[in-house]
Image 1 (cartoon, each protein chain N blue to C red):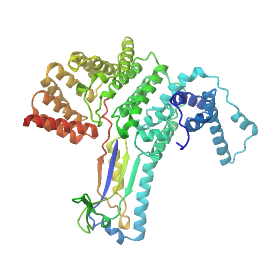
Image 2 (image 1 turned 120 degrees about the vertical axis):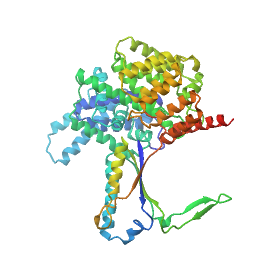
Image 3 (image 1 turned 180 degrees about the vertical axis):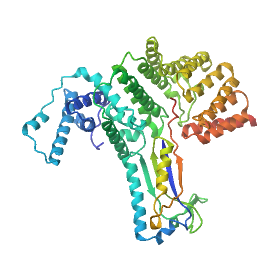
Image 4 (image 1 turned 45 degrees about the vertical axis):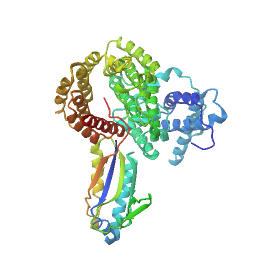
Length: 133
Length: 420
């Protein structure tokens, strides 16, 4: 069963925009943590994919204009939640997905204090039918 | 695979896959290391896929594969020894690289069975057991398995290698379990095959073509274990269940991959050869006495398959079989189907009554299947408004795209009916 674990920036202003203000060693610790999380999921044979996204100041909302041309909106400097990154994992049971999410949530912030970021966990739709026996 | 290479033709591929567990058994017997032998056989299989199309199939393909795999094993042993900087005598090495004299074809059936038991070891998670079975017994490559389950090859490779570690640390040796252990082990093996079949039992459209092949692979593996245990009624029952279910495959989805329920399927598209084979297997199995859950499910599938029109379905008999199944296993999905059968025989209110009892089952409470069945029975009872509500709730809760589309379509159809 596949789950998507989504790490949201709390608000664009708060955490990730704040990373630029972190101490170098805090940034290093955060990066090392995320990398080792991905590695351990790869080793356990559970990782489907993971990506980190650019900071929200690169985000644009796009709609089709009258002729189908892209009409963009943005930048969004403040007060909006954005996806910061995600993992898709393939696990035996939802509890395992929650465990991984809880671990991701403890990614260290300034001074090594866990950020306890909210991680949204959602099942990924599949084509397989529900199991019978 | 490498571009520009001619692919292996279907019959050679079939031969290769048939030989896979036999070759693995022979290599394990020789080197006593399941994990390493499994890797070596995988490499030999890949070598065959690359070489056979241009060089032709060797005179003794089985011997060829054992030889190539054994060479990999000795290469590996040699580098291992070098790594450990251990002194080794020339004689020991010569012994290890001696040409293979393979004189044990009688053990093939047993070896395949032992491999099944190892790969479906109870210490493994079901996804690991599935992956390892497909590779070690099925002779599929890691890439093929990864593709079928839509995960990266590196992830699947890790899953397989960890599964082998788990088996190693469990201390299981390559030998036939005791008859007592076999009963328990066989249950795991059949369950794993059932899960593989179920994974593949989906729409044949587009990207999911590969998943369809999984159900074919499950049938092939079930045939393989049936060949080893022809007198085991549940083995025959599972194979029959797969054939009788797979027979409806072509009728089961529409041109856009949409789900077509049993009562709306074009029965002319059902595969009569598979139905006959399934029924014959089942009839023999049932005559052996000990009736198990797979045989009962196969019997239910057979009753559906035998009805020329949906209105000819013998629901009374299906209900009787579900009653037997419910007594045999405490499975909530069986209880759900039991409720449907009861509704078909005694009317929707009887079915709804049974569903009410299931509401308190923690495994089913709020489950989309329960809600979907209730929607269906409410519709039968003429309570369209309540049915629409439940179809929509079920659609929100399912994680299967074809099911979701189907449930939303049912809600929309009923809404239009009310409006007219």
